[in-house]
Amino acid sequence: MAPSTHTVTNQAPPLVGYDVFTSDQALAEAVERHLDPGLLAEAREELSLLGRASGSTQVREWGEQANGDPPRLRTHDRYGRRIDEVEFHPAWHRLLGRSVSAGLTDAWGRPGGHVRRAAGFLVVSQAEAGHGCPVSMTHAAVPALRAEPELAAVWEPAALSHVYERELRPVAEKPGVLLGMAMTEKQGGSDVRANTTEARPLAADGEYVLTGHKWFCSAPMSDAFLVLAQAPAGLTCFLVPRVLADGSRNAFALQRLKDKLGNRSNASAEVEFDGTTWAHRVGEEGRGIRTIMGMVAATRLDCVLGSAALMRQAVAQAVHHASYRSAFGGPLVDKPLMRNVLADLAIESEAATVLGMRLAAAYDAGTPEELALLRIAVPAAKYWVTKRCTPLVAEALECLGGNGYVEESGMPRLLRESPLNSLWEGSGNVQALDVVRALRTEPAALDALLREVGAARGADHRLDRAIRGLLVELADLEGIEARARRLTERLALVLQGALLVRWAPPEVADAFCAARLGGDGGAAFGTLPHTLDLRAVVERARAVV
Image (tube, rainbow, N blue to C red; front, top):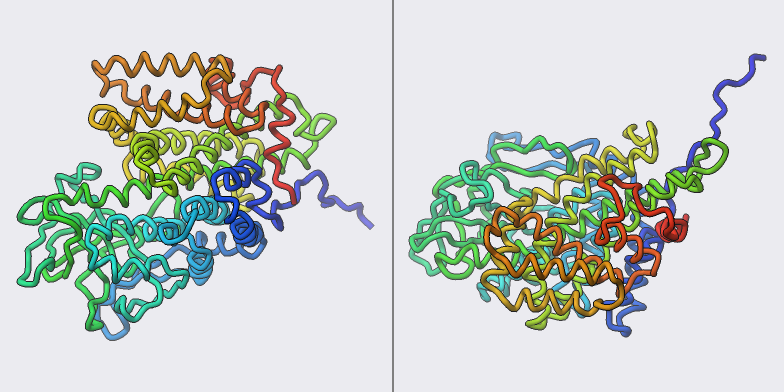
């Protein structure tokens, strides 16, 4: 008999069958830190349940299926009637149903809701990120709806529901709904003031018909959408339901679905309004941007959380692989240079998680000081964390070598997903300019930020020096637009450093301050000072199976 040539050795087992929540020490500690003690037991139980599901073989397979069989547009039914619906793989509905039933659209209606939801969003996004779009949009629509109390009374309870029902019916007949958003147009992009969609008022107060188009419509399978259009008094926010109260379909023509780099499981569409599309005004005429900004701020935080989730999963996969794979005489994780790379990735991931959860806690607090902090910290965090996501995921993929470049590893899907959150809800320049706008017009925002970082002063000399440098930058606003990115980056790094110094283990805070604030690190990952306790940093990042 010929000798076997196909004995499989020295391969890491798949990272499945573990609790995504409890294995993430930084996340679990953030939940304990930011939640009222009376809510902790219940929150831990629900998040661990979600974590075990997200780390299971079954849910991981759902993610592969939903991305491997992307949504399809059906413009007409078999009889030729226009229906404008999107068909998804059944796995998509299972993922979405699980997240809705876990309360991930219900942050505004329960104590500690934002921290609990943020942690859950971080957990489920590690199994499959695309279905997070409708979850995020539905959650974020609530603040905008509250600008019109009569609408909020109808739509908010359904948006906060833990019931997912995919069929399109009038809102009064549904136990739960999903909400999407359509802002940008082909000629304007981020410059929504250039929108041309027209809103013509009808006789009934608050009712309009729309004529125009939207270049990007998020979650086009949803029950209703927040839309910007030009009313007689200027740009205004509107609610556009898919199904009207009498059961008839609203004029909402899906022209095509976008063929995207990543985020393949989720649908993004181009939409046309034909002059009969019924809409209800949300907020005052001419104040559409102000009205919808509450939604935008909440979705920007979800961009931070979504990127933190991708980063955490990439790091978990890299550490797991290096723990089982041997090369050059021993496990990869014990090689000094590989340990440096893994530790560098781990501190970046933890900094993203700690910052995202701190901002979720600010929403729960809801005080003027905490809301002022959100005004400047959310765009800064959105700018920096989402930009760090792609290089981190790419480096983590490299830790798996050629195995990481193969689709079966799951790493290519993470890499394709990684640039998205930097684009959604305003690209990097938009975020940096929003930080500048907050500095110029809202002094309470800067005061709140300085109080936050000031709480850590005196604990690390590198952080103290970075704070002083930031204050020098802030003292001179001359030519600030051209250096808005530089300022926003420094602001985000100082904030992350202050949070880690206060709450992370000393080895994590020490490594972050040395490399990110003290200048003792290179441009690539894996350039931390070798004198740090890198073994402890890597061990903390390990996902325990």
